[in-house]
Image (cartoon, rainbow, N blue to C red):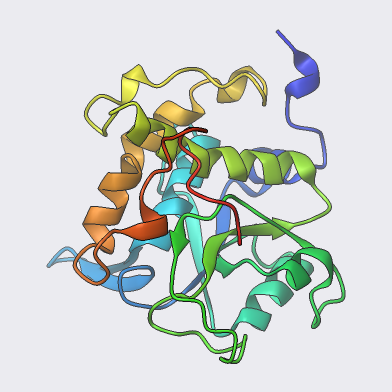
Length: 237
């Protein structure tokens, strides 16, 4: 066992799994990506669904051995609200963040840079629209966002997203999730992280069809890039 890969004491992964015992996921409310719905006629319980929400559930499943009930959603009102929430520790990750080189290096409102996962959705790019407006259809390269000062956590989040692409490339679905391989980068507690991702939300195609296909049919940069480099979709730009 490579103990050096285990979560570092004091790190985000350690804090979430050993202290807070919940994942706090920032999310923007928009159709197909982050929607509040009511389930159960008796309890009228409210929950979140959509592509952004699914990546929160997938991340939670990785952290808590397949359990998605320990995610706490934080409704964000603006792009700056998301960065402020990350900066102050109000959330552990933001789903649905738009990658920009400026925010990667030094985001204006907080004065620090942030780390982005590989994008999981590409919308129409419109640089003339205010960066702080939350549009119903996300624009640009959409990803999970983390603080830039915990590379182990940022890597963990990156590989959660990549797991959904790898599963689609290998034709592994929610029903056949056990065919996913082990992940050895984060210690023995997370060997099953990719199996937990796919068992909870399915592969990328399943996620897209469930939430976004009826709104934005899948095409272009949202298709797998299987030649020549494999399941990663495209570069940020």
